Image 1 (cartoon, rainbow, N blue to C red):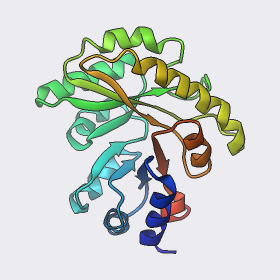
Image 2: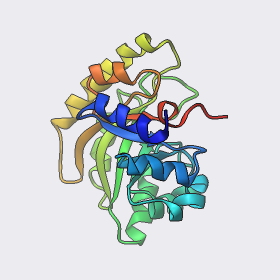
Image 3: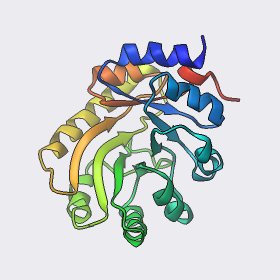
Image 4: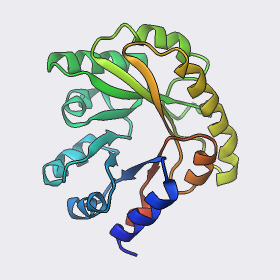
Length: 215
């Protein structure tokens, strides 16, 4: 099927769950095809790659879903509506500073290392509530969600990680303040998004089901 048809099929299946079209290595023409089909959010992994094609894209909401290096923070704040991969207090403080310099309140999600994997980025589940107290004092940040990338495993085995994320999401929703309103739970990709939705995802990140496998 075409990109247009794939998006239509996915959107029908997702219902009220939001779709982030993962557009890593996808050219602007094919991204625009997905936007015309009804995709309203795209997700890019690399700041530099996105910058090379952003001027050719149709209007949409633009999320950074890959790891953000410190030397790319200024550019990311300029380019993206939402940064989903805020994985440390140092990073969010830097984002707050760079956003303040251009008079912007940057929307972000907090990335949780739900599998406690040493090779992955993200806040540990048991430290996030304490960290949230510090984040609430930042004036140019608006925390709108949580995201995770569970350990690589067969799809059904991701369920336990998604359950933990949903429990944390529910807990943090009860502690919302002015710049800290956890609206979204971004979890699940092409291989496990159905399980993520069953466990409470409000947003899923899908690429290969729409654009095909990447080289």
